[in-house]
Amino acid sequence: MGRLIFGAIASIDGYTVDSSGSFDWAHPDPEVHAFVNDLERDVGTYLYGRRMYETMKVWQDLPGEGDDEPVIADYANVWRSADKVVYSSSLAEVTTPRTRLEKRFDPEATRRLVAESDSDVSVGGPTLAAAAFAAGLVDEVHLILVPVAVGGGTPALPHDQFVRLELREARRFAGGTVALQYTVEHS
Image (cartoon, rainbow, N blue to C red; front, side, top):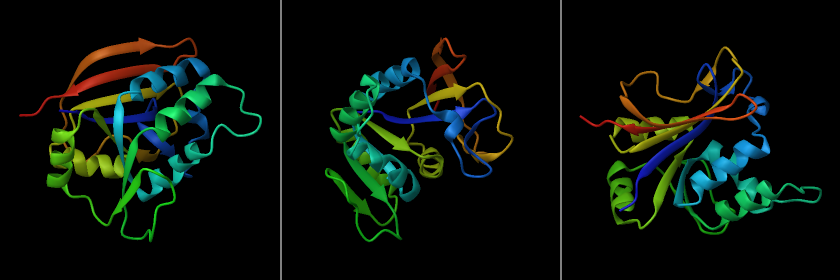
C-alpha cells in the first residue's frame, strides 16, 4: 500500500506562488534539487490539477539544450517514469505519456488508488491538495521552505482546514532552505 504525499516548495511565509503568480524565487539550487529528486524517486503516480500539470509537463522534454546540470536530467527521468492523473473540467486532452485525464477529483477513487499502489502517490498543487486534505487522504507533507517572504499568493496548506502534523525530519541546506517532513495525524 502506498502513501499519499503532498509536497511543495514554499516561501517561509507559506506561499507556493506570490501575489503575481510567480515562483521564480523558488528555483532550487542543485543541493536542494537533488534532495527533492530523492524524495520523489518512490512516487509511482502524480495527481495534478490543470495548473500544476501545465507547469510540470515541461519535464517531459527536459533536459533541453544547454541544461548541463545532472539534477535536471535526474528529475526529468523521475517525472517521466511515473504515471500522472490530471483532474480538470476544462482540459480536452493531456499531451504527455503515462497520463490520464479525469474531469473531477473523486476522493474514493483516490483512496482506492493509494491503497492498491505498490508505490507512493503524490498530490501536487495546493488546490487539489486541499481537496485531498478535506477528504482525510493525505498521509505525509513534505515542505521545502525557501528563505524568502513573499507576503501573499497561493498558500501551500489549506487556510480553512485544521491539519495536525507530526514532524518526522528536518534538514537545513547551505543556502538557507529548510526541508520539513511531516506525518499527518488523522483523528
